[in-house]
Length: 149
Image (cartoon, rainbow, N blue to C red; front, side, top):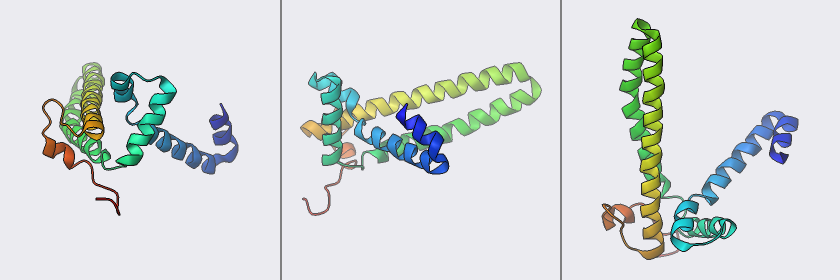
């Protein structure tokens, strides 16, 4: 409610502030789900723990999620093109198929990101690879901060 009031009263600047708050929240809560599952902490403690893991290993893990998002985007282009052509020929069927295809792509991308985040969490906290991920794959997602080796 407070954020909405800032956005409405401050106009363009308010939207920028809200966007920055959203980015900060996404960063702080990046590992919340794995922390909740593996460490049996409460919600507030999980957010704090997620932020500390992110701070320790900051930022590089986003490369994997950006890659997943990029691949899903590239895979969706031909699907959208086919659906677009179908919309021209049979609009109701094309629209229904487009909605279904986009939903499937979003769901698949979200599932892949969730699995990747859980594997990164395990590597960040234990140094061990999880499931089908090789240790080398996960090591490339983290780099030490400058000044640390």
